[in-house]
Length: 356
Ligand code: TTP
Ligand code: MG
Image 1 (cartoon, rainbow, N blue to C red):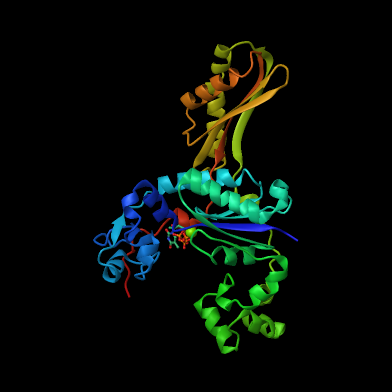
Image 2 (cartoon, helix red, strand yellow):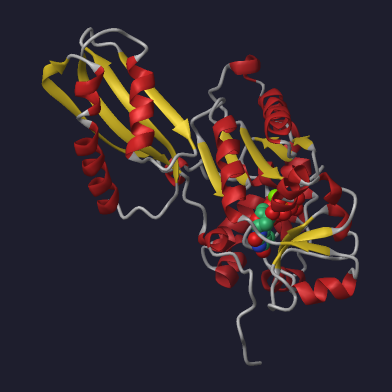
């Protein structure tokens, strides 16, 4: 039985803006493009949601629903930074992380022994760490698979935790509307409704062959989800590890100056390698690896750097200060932001001119 946590930040972009400007907290506001520029909203805070304001809504329409709405411009670089910090917190607990967007990720904690292996405790500790360190809230769902964990994270939103234990999965999933199943949009939901299936419980009684004829291979997925089942594993491939270069020197480098002298060559190699990997993602951290001639190794890294020669020189000097020994090997690297789905790379801040 797996233990999966799904985490999703509450009104993510808006929460960051509220943290940085508390005057926004108790009034309806949104983050997005201007009405004059035919902008759309990326998200809004919860007071604005009471007026019906929503993500992806044209700003002009939002003003009609809520005339006192304040619209703050998008600062995607800032949100990316917080997203990277959230990942850093998750990484304290598990390596098995699948980010779905800037503010959302699955964590597989099946084999984690921290907190007596309690996934609920881990989720609570993560929520507390994000709140106290980053000043925003996240909601979490904990269960035996991705599907149920994701539905659960929405259950007590905002700032909530919902645990669906193994013996609750059956009744929890039975009561769900078919719309809760990922991939079931308004069109599929309507088709299912016409076939007599409104809830997952209804869907369980469907003829699997009929579902297959109607929905192809998705028919089987529908049946599995209706039973609260999901065999997909947490896909860590989405996390870009790093790009690095390193050199072992035939003669040990005796002092700091001889190490620093190697940096320009190493950085050039790193830059070439990064160009080859067709790197479009942001650099999250730069790091220097040093192996001393007693074979002890140390790594110095820094978040939010541009990975320039100056950055690497500072990191190198920090690392060299840890031991007073000649150096056998030097390495330079960058750790990268995870791949986030395209939708979030190219946010729809502006409505395209369209003919109707
Ligand atoms: P969501 O997690 O979908 O929304 P949210 O975090 O704002 O609110 P909730 O409390 O309901 O989770 O998306 C995360 C961020 O992605 C959101 O803050 C803004 C951005 N986004 C867009 O830019 N366009 C969109 O259409 C959506 C849905 C989100
Ligand atoms: Mg969110």
